[in-house]
Length: 65
Image (cartoon, rainbow, N blue to C red; front, side, top):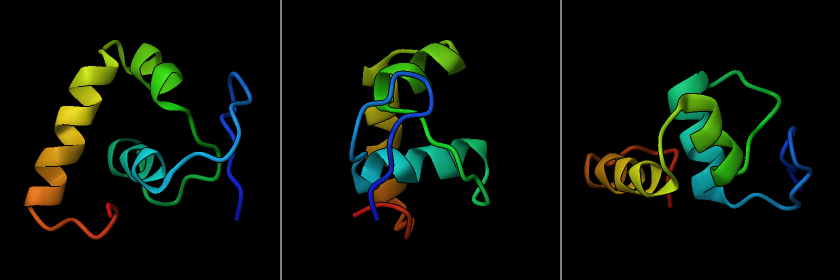
C-alpha cells in the first residue's frame, strides 16, 4: 500500500516513517506526514525523530522494521 504525506505529497513513505507517525500521533491514524513535515508539526528535528525510531526499535516496538 502506497502512503503519501498529507502536507507535501511526498510519495511512498517508508515503514519507519509510518511507524513514527503511529507511535507519536496514534495507531488509528489514516493521514501521515513525511519526516520533514512531521518534525515541523511536532516542533522538533528530523534527527530527533530518527533517534526516537532507534529507541523504539531497541525496545522491540513492532511498528518499526
